[in-house]
Image 1: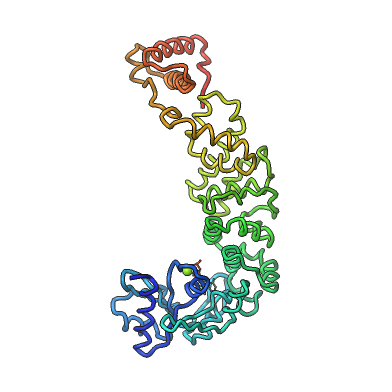
Image 2: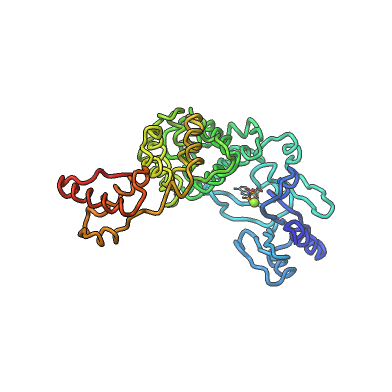
Amino acid sequence: MLPRAAATAVVERLARAGFEAYLAGGCVRDHLLGIEPDDYDVATSASPEDVKRVFPGSRGVGEAFGVVLVRVGGHTIEVATFRSDGTYADGRRPDSVRFSSAAEDAERRDFTINGLFQDPVSGKVVDFVGGERDLRERVLRAIGDPERRFAEDHLRLLRAVRFAARFGFLIEPETARAIRTCAPRLAAIARERIGGEVRRMLSEPARPRAVRLLEEFGLDAVVLDEPHRVSVGRRVETPPSEVPFAWALAAWALDRSGDGPETECDPDLPDRWRAALLLSNDETNDVREGLACRRALRAFADLPLSGRKRLAARPGFPMATWLLRREAPERADAVDHWHAATPEAERWPTPLLSGQDLIAAGLAPGPAFKRVLDAVFNEQLDGRLTTRADAIARAIEIAAKDKGSGAGVPRSG
Ligand code: ATP
Ligand code: MG
């Protein structure tokens, strides 16, 4: 069963039981835009108890908000009782909700394009907020008084950017003015929720527009917890349309600092953004590693073969070459060309020697082992060693020198 058919079945069953019921919000918007919705929400006059009576075995969640999860045909449909939100004391959540009418339920929603209902059987759209027209004219407009709506729930500031960016809609002037005015209030929102919104907008194809809007409205300062800036670089625009969050973050970080391959960004940035956006360990490490590889990649043309191969084997290499694509396309071409022309087995061959081989050759295990193995492997990567016998002879030579100099073999990688 398709998700839409499941949602339609829910609406029909509620209607047959005598209740008013519609598809609501994002799924109506997406459907009218010709986009396949991610999930379907149903809004109804039935109380949560009624919904559970019509669908025995369904589960109430956030019961106070009147939401019941109904399983139909392998899909979970969120069924919410028409409600109107009470006052917002904390700028995050309503203090109370009151079950109400379809019209009031539309009014409590954030933007007109998100405030539509639809009867899935007749296809009739029920529009209390002018959302159909705004969809047609490609306008993002707050429902009601924009400043009040953003003051109620500051997360709507970021939702505005996400929707305007995603659909390429113009933000209606009063709504835009209110976003600018209310931007500093976003600081009251939990870092986790800010990070969640930013993660979504930067992972979507419209990430360049999202970044531009965040900076245009001064939301970047609160989101990143650093002074407001307007990007000078355009790395975030580099295709493909969807990239890992860490790539988009690194691109944005560099864009805020400059536009060429020599651009440096603050070494503390990954840790600062980690705190600001509640990045995971993996995301933070990916940003750090990608930026480090990018720095190393500057010298690519002058690196020995072993240096190139070691760099290409690092986890941050794909991100680094992607960043270079916008900064110095001809250099990125050269790196890509080399990479494509060098088979994997040649880029990262099985080492000719292991620690066991060194022990068998009579060398005593110790801290010099790794240095010797690295140096031998470098010569293998450089194409200067091709047999095990040569590698062992070379290892003994290097080990003797390593011991002699005390300083050890030059470190690789
Ligand atoms: P997405 O495609 O990102 O899921 P969506 O519009 O479905 O977009 P949801 O967060 O799933 O967004 O919310 C579903 C609906 O609930 C919205 O369309 C909107 O009508 C309403 N809504 C969600 N968050 C808010 C909010 N913070 N303030 C007011 N209404 C909201
Ligand atoms: Mg949704």
